[in-house]
Length: 526
Image (cartoon, rainbow, N blue to C red; front, side, top):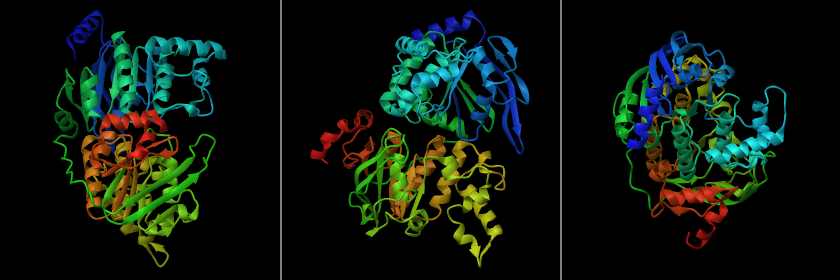
């Protein structure tokens, strides 16, 4: 924190009580203590980081602050007075706003129409007034968004600005903004722009609670830090300038395992997966068509695919894995045309994958961990038409132990896991099948630093055993660390595939943000 900002925070703190103060907040669920006497404060004009590994209790705490859950014990003070927050609307009436990881925007409506749904609570629907409000607030806060444009035409960074504007334009003036993993799907340029906006808002007196697993961002942006571990506060730091490894140690109780990077493979093995001239129309009105996709995935290499979410990555994954059929000869596995084959048939050929959409595609939330463990590998637990239930149960336990999945019992539904633990479960289930071709979309999304290092090391180990891997990720640092070759996806097209040597993070960020014209000239040098 610079001296000028530190001085301003001190002055704001002296003016009155903290904006928000938690006093011994606790919440229990069957078999688990989510929060245990959590206490900390957020000052006026402060950007306060909340850190913790997966399952540490961050999400439960945010829900209690925003009125989605009622605490079992403890008190919440808002600007010096004890309150009970009964609902999100009550929280908003106090001046709170929350932007969650998954945006709540209707794709077919315009920006103004989306905001009108929540801003016109008294039945007055004056769209032109909403447009003027958006434009005025966008100019004031530096949150440029086209008010009349449909949401499905917006970039991910623009969508996030819409969510922040929704909070800023609510009826009660915004006093506390809660951001849950706000940069998980942003390019470096978009993250930088967001931080500039947040600093300006904080300078005007807004308090910000910033939840993130990206510790370098926490150090760059935040004033103070509170660390949760197993539902308890284990550290309150008056500065976010602690070393990344120290912050990680506080989160997990020990130093995170190192990422054991092996030398990049210059001479990969034979082609295992090949895509030739793949064209597919959009599957829905707001989807992205695929246009002339060409790539090769070789044994013993990791191909990284960068790009802002929504540029065709999900459609490409569906085509490669068999969720969506394609022209027969457009996709080949070991030289065999597989465009007509379904998911199950491609699994038999050694292809396994982890989808970006954890809930719904990765797991069925209502089913137990035992049953979810069977979803993609049930055949190995069948004997003469009977399911070997004991073996399935033991396998689920081993999977959780091997991949550090924190859970209260494998008989409990997948919905009982935190997002990060759910990701570890899905990754473990597919990696344990020893695939020869493996495609992972956002493999460490929402996962704490220690768990991310384990997952990344597992991917490198799979590569060392000769598997062909594709990693689709918004995290450029992750792609630069793991990949042998890398490409960018934008507008349903894929850039020339380049060796990782000689490519830097800023260059990739420019390609991701600029679209096809940002990398079209590379055809001459690829």
